[in-house]
Amino acid sequence: MNHINRTEGDPALPALPAVEKASGIGSGMRGQILTTGLALGLIAAVTGTVSLSFAQTINPTQPSAVMNPNPSTQTRDLYHPLAPTIPGENLGSEAAAAAVAPLQPTPEAVPDSETGVGADIDASAPPVEIDGKAVAEAQRRLWRIRPKAGAAMVYDDNIFISNTNRVADVIWSVTAGLAFEMGDYRNLKENFLIAEWYGTGYFYTQNPQQNAFNQAAALLGQYRWNKLTGQVESRYQYLTGPDREVGAFTDRQLFVNAIRFNYDYSDKTTFDAEFLQNTQIFKSYLNQYDYRLKLGGDYRILPKVKLGGEGVAGILDVAEGPLQYYQQLRGRLRYEATGKLTFKTSAGIEFRQFEGESDFKVEPVFSLGLEYAPFDGTLISLTGYRDVIGSNSLEGQNYVATGVQISIQQRVLQKFFLGVAFGYENDTYFATESNIDSDRVDNYIFARPSISYNVADWVKTGVFYEYRNNDSNISSNSFYDNRVGVEMNLAF
Image (cartoon, rainbow, N blue to C red; front, side, top):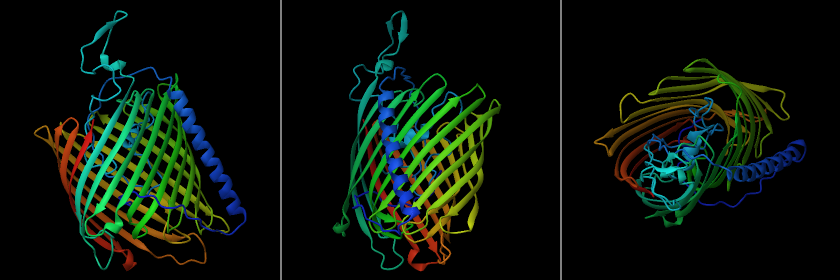
């Protein structure tokens, strides 16, 4: 699920580059794949929107704030490894929570506010009698519109993540956006629809030529039948800023579309399926298109333990490289010791073939996640992963990314939150074509302590410091960076 901070900056729209590739079976298949993927994504969005318009059940329970470390766009497995798979649960509440997170999330999520435009009845009002039943007024709030805003000032001593000629600057940013929420938008278990858009302006004090306007949009919907649950997700990001893998400022557009189904065969047995399309369009570097189908199942062997497995089949098309076919066989385990501890892991083997090449590559792959709340106001999160990624900067090369991230949050005096996050990732590159030499190895670390204060339910402010260091055997890709900033987030 997670790689660490590959996308260091946020968005400004790049023009779509036309990347030439030799004609033949690869280019023809690319066109068919892209057409099919876009069609499925469109069908998923329309189907999800229409289906979710029939949502009826509202659960007014408000979830508590959770830790939300900075996400990465580097991995193909884009979803949090602790996404629930227990029968009766939502297919991916963590993915839904990420859909409504700020563009630059801090280790603490802004607590949900129960006030909002679009609600005709106050959620805090006492229950009323309807047809002889006490129904909370909050249950009648079928939808709401939530304006969100934020502002930050950050000092960065290496804005171009450069190995030489380091340039420092003070960067100001302003974020504004809207979220439309309908159905079970609090618990994300029953039928719901969430749509949002954010725009962020970045203003450089000493380097105004780098000013940018980044955008992010997301649509997430779920519809539950008797035993079958369907979910559709669509995300778009429009980014300008430094990218660690390419080692420079660059413009890129990121598209993710997914259709998921979960079937509760019995109280102990569940099956799931997912089709995912992930596209990365770079202005000056290599585009890539990834299409993946996943099928899996789980069986509850004990009240708190589930065992299962999954199979994955995918096609990766990276510009200027051969078409890649990959398959994964994984076993998976979920363990919920208490209400304070959750552990989930998925591990197995990947087989990868390259068009026009007789050799194939075998790699172990895994993802794991642990969340532990030992005391009230304390949350510890651990994420680990190993995956194969296509390079956006080096022709005919992939890399194996292996990493770990840990974050700790502690609430103090009810409204103060102390947080710290650490991460490490090793990226080892390999050639996808026999005529290419590949020897790049990166070791990346980061540390981010922070303090935040909840001024009110709808206002949070904080300060943070972040240190990043990429040690590469290719000197031009090595850098270190210090950032310190003040930020404020508002969610009405």
